[in-house]
Length: 214
Image (cartoon, rainbow, N blue to C red):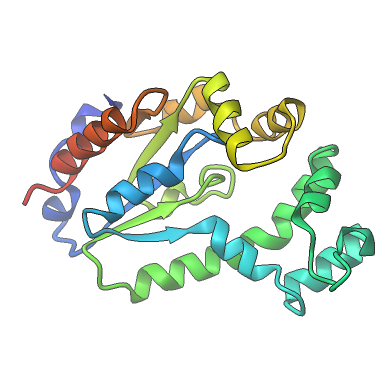
């Protein structure tokens, strides 16, 4: 675990008289953001999963669904007319302009839901798990930013355990995001998730103690 900004070591919630702390977690495809978010959840944090919100936004009949079918065509649909995310991925990750158009459809809706969830939440610690947190300009709504990193080989290995994606397709997705080294420069904390789960838990525990002392 690396601290990026030593001037922010005093717990933000106490310093500003806030009752809640919003913690953003991001990284690269397969770096282990969701694993880190789950560890924070075990400390009674409320986790907002941006990916899940995005999936809900593209359900059949939704506004984003209609716009996506109009732009990308009916070939991205399954037989039951639900969007096939694998087919959609093959389309957008081969052309940057199409990926940008997809993000322009989905991101505004997801951001509105995230802001509403944060406003309504009574949790002391809110964790925003968002792979495109920086790309979607969500950094300004979080109090602290954690970037989760891993070696590229670890990323590929993890993704292939849960997905049929080829190494080539995985690399396309990784390269579609802002490079990790640039994300690290914006981070308050960096978690190295290349090792064991025990090591990752230790880094999360250290950050939690620094952010919000009981």
